[in-house]
Length: 250
Ligand code: FE
Image 1 (cartoon, rainbow, N blue to C red):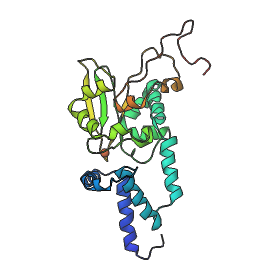
Image 2: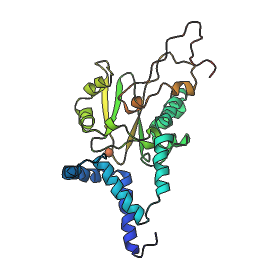
Image 3: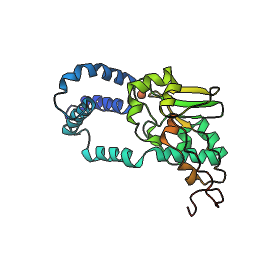
Image 4: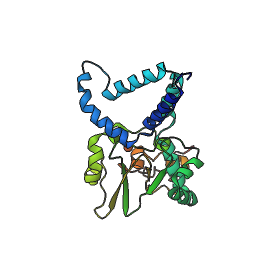
């Protein structure tokens, strides 16, 4: 912070931002480096990426550019507070409120901000709606771009090379691996995330949920249904003697 070389500080800040934004170019470099780093693999429990992150963190901490407590807070926030439950609330709201849904489809970032979800990697959020005729699925073919404010951190498979390549080449086969079989006449649309645009799938509201509250509906919304590799949970069939809505007493 009180580094004597002021011009240097500027450069560093710049690089730091790039890292966070998960720039595609940056990730390209990353891939190249991977082949290099294989020698490092002598007995360490850590992955190459983890080793690189540790090294970077150590340097940044030593130079006083970042604060360890602040880093921990960010990680904890994304691990425990920000996750798919946020996206599920957005979806449930769209299912019960047609005006909200219209706003969500026009400007995803603004509409999720109405529910107080905003932040990094969600600056340009595009919501794509599943319909009877179209199923949407999201991938980042180059790295792992993902709408953090509504889904949290991406699952490991989302970042894997097989998913990234196969989602585009054979989306129906990928869906089958996830246990999803779609009618042959349904169009599967695959959206490739970038550092600029992140996608959130608005899944179809399950049948048999008429009259359900937003909170009840949100329980049916899975993370994968918002990536498009899954569909929402089905409404439980009418419990005997019940009026239809689940969660009596909720
Ligand atoms: Fe990416």
